[in-house]
Length: 280
Figure 1 (spheres, rainbow, N blue to C red):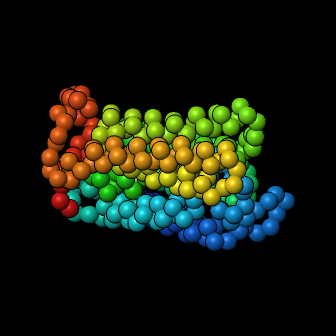
Figure 2 (spheres, rainbow, N blue to C red):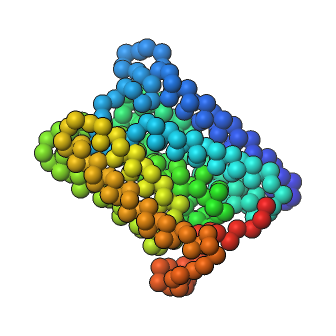
């Protein structure tokens, strides 16, 4: 049994490390360069498609992913850690983490080659993959949680809107109204995790991505997109305030609300967000 466990751990180390390196290299390459020319339009990740109601600022979102990739180094390192807590947390997420990296890798290749609906399908599959991982393993240490779960999940959620809007290319009044209403779904999504799990990680992540969307729309001269920027920045500010209210007491080692006011006593799946992490 110990031999099998060692083999599984070695497999997690190899697959996680390789998928991480492959995704990072691909993401950075296509952020700067375009694929070889072909029958369909091909350009770099940020330059080849028109703005939509959910387009994101390449500066903010790029910085966001650099931060996530740095945190994922902690996840990969945790597979080699002497701490059983960190090593166990990393191995339980291993399959989902590798699957997410491979799905995002496929998404990037499809996106830069303008295969929009297949790219959207990859995002849908990964959204379910990461959501399933979250609901099963939401009590991992914070650095692992943000890098391997919350960060990718939040971006995957917002990217579903972004890619879907680009693929539809709808410009009718009904489409514009739907887009204006849909951005408030981001607020609902972030608040769900903040209220149900006290998860300020996802709250902050969605807040940053909403701000990224708002900044991109703000630079547009189209009035509908400028209105969308107001909604997106409002969502970002609201989530930032609520996330701070949830996070700061934990950072100060205080708990202003009894657990039952936000999460029921039986919901013991949220201990990571009290920031009482075991030492490595």
